[in-house]
Image (spheres, helix red, strand yellow):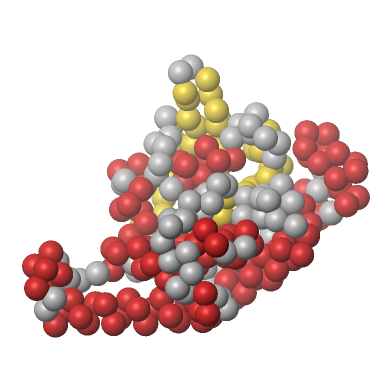
Amino acid sequence: MSSANDLVLEANSISIVFGGLRAVSDFSCSLYKGEVVGLIGPNGAGKTTIFNMLSCVYKPTDGQISFWDKNGNVHNTGRLQAFQLHKLGVARTFQNIRLFQNLSVQDNVKIALHAQRKANLFHILFRTRRFRHDERRIQQRVDELLQLFKIYEKREELAKNLPYGEQRKLEIVRALASSPKLLLLDEPAAGMNPQETDELMNLIKFIRDKFDITILLIEHDMHLVMGICQRLIVLDYGRVIASGDPETVTKDPVVIKAYLGEEALNDA
């Protein structure tokens, strides 16, 4: 049973309005340390909009989002920019792959570590000891991650030359480079075949156990969702229509009618 001491993020009745259209209404959730939570619902239900609010890309029109950083300090994210929240420990991926396609695999990960550099422009221009130390430390971190996720041998390849599944993996590795406390995955299985989806499922389990982080994911693949999520939150027309453990939620008649359908449920 999760306790208040394990809270990582809490959204309290957040809403957002675009030009008079209420895209999300009174959304609340609590995310706890080490759990994997799925955010599901029909296209246009408001899932990515919620991700954008949780990651400070959008500011809620109403309500409040609180995030507990790595030191246990709580922050009202309404006062933060996206890059500030990222430094505090929130990382995300996007539905459409956003790698630097013409850079190498290792350079994609290095860019994610830019905020951890201690060297300033002076050190970089004159290649001082601090600069060299920074380079060694960052390269070591990159090598560790690429070896851990079994793409070290491809470190010199351009990102665009990786198979689709490995591009998705690299995007997740890049998000993990900053050692986040909360990882937001926006449709990580989009475009994957069944084998790649199964590999992704195992990868997410590995990430949760290895890094002891909280994961919130948007996903339409119910096989993946049922295989890794401890809790589900279901959206429809910007509102939560159900939440709870996957078995209970997927048997809810309201959820079946709004999103799953009998056929989708039987395939899960």
